[in-house]
Amino acid sequence: MDHLRHLLPQQMLFLLLLLGFAAQSQKPVLNLEKEILHDKEMESHLFKNTRMETATGIPRAIYNPDFKVTVSSPEEMAMEYLVADKERIRIGDPRAELKYVATIQAKTGIRVLFEQQMKGYPVYHADVRVSINDDHEVVFFSSNYQQPGEVDVRKLVDEQNALYKAKNHLGLSVSPVGFLIPIRSQMRPPATENPDSVMPMTVILRN
Image (cartoon, rainbow, N blue to C red; front, side):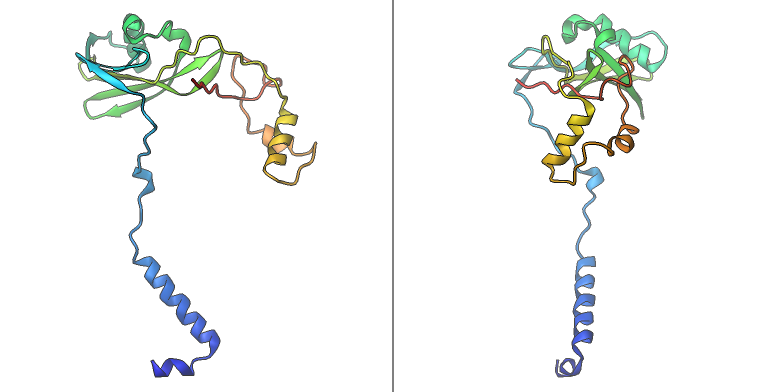
């Protein structure tokens, strides 16, 4: 180490930085894209082929529902099952309460995703999934459907005041006017509402 004593301070700093980068590069890299974060689950129990939420009795998963659908689009096939089995899955009006989101192709069939909506707004973390195999049989159903009763979705704060309050709360430089135009251009209100009157929102249900 005696030869290091002759290095200039700038050279010594550069050498330390270089050693630091080399050590950092040897650390394992976490693949966050594959990380699964589980939400807190409600207590449930298994009854025959159905996993039910203990507190409410709502089915959260049904294994092999034994239902054959008519060959159609993925959305319509899944909806056919939801409507036919609505009493058991405890969804009052699937066509009115569920909005089609996407279809995922699997090795042995498809998985159709829906989200719960109330009065045109999505309910937070309330999705429904139906898996259909290549023989057009429903093989799995899962649900985070909520039964909140009546919900008031009236707008209590207009866009300008809401954005002003948010920026003020975050300690950002706030101007009552001027920042609405670039932000508003990214907003997409529900199709059932007047685009000039409401902000997009999500209904969050709390017990």
